[in-house]
Length: 365
Image (tube, rainbow, N blue to C red):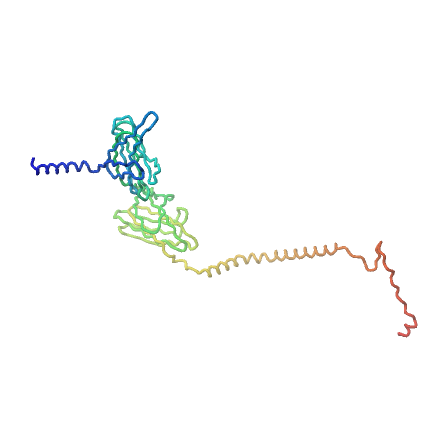
């Protein structure tokens, strides 16, 4: 055989072998420790474990330990098959990055020749996770590793076609389509937005299709589906036609406004919170002065009516105090009079006054 022909045959065999070896992984020994596992990527692997047992239990345990890095929001899919015909079992167990048992859906024991196990484990965390696979037992096996992104299932559209299921929204634009198939049944879309105290709600309704029909808008600024005198109503019927208005909120408290869109056709609803045009902001001192004035104005009639009862109460209290003092004074015991004799006490005899002589009196006269 010519050297050129040998080279050509070798090249053909190499190209034929490349598709067969793509994705295949070889078992690398030693791989029996969680500290130094064999890292696997997507693909297939043929392996063998040779543990020995007797009547008393295992004599020698052989383990193949692998690690698979699962990106966040990905699914690890394993296909595990027992390929030998022996009676011994082969098991697979999973551990996390901290070498703790996961007890995941990937854990399985195979004992029937040709038995296949397929399991899935989802990494729902916001970071990459490493999963350790520990294969143990006696026999040969086939392992297939696959990683796929988690399919994000979009949430079902929110129903907002009733007062109770109104969609809570913020400032911005919202589109939709309403269709009154039955004139007796009005299809409506409900939105609910919070208008802060002292602010107003600016609403613009635009029709976005060329179909025949009119789209209506109604606001409800109270907690019932009945419009008040300050609510607004809009209507558009032509293509690219729009209508707008401003709903004033309360100056003292936040207002929950419900917006209902009904009729026939596509629409675009735009809502913005704007400063109120009906209320002039007052400073704190003016508000305080107004509050004090209102309090005095409210209490003044009450104070006038209370003057006479208060005077009567004061007079009654004064009379009670005077009566108590008088009662205490009359009940006080009187002491002995001067010069009175009390039994058992020796008193000196009273002194007698000396009489002046008549002659002295005449002299004095």
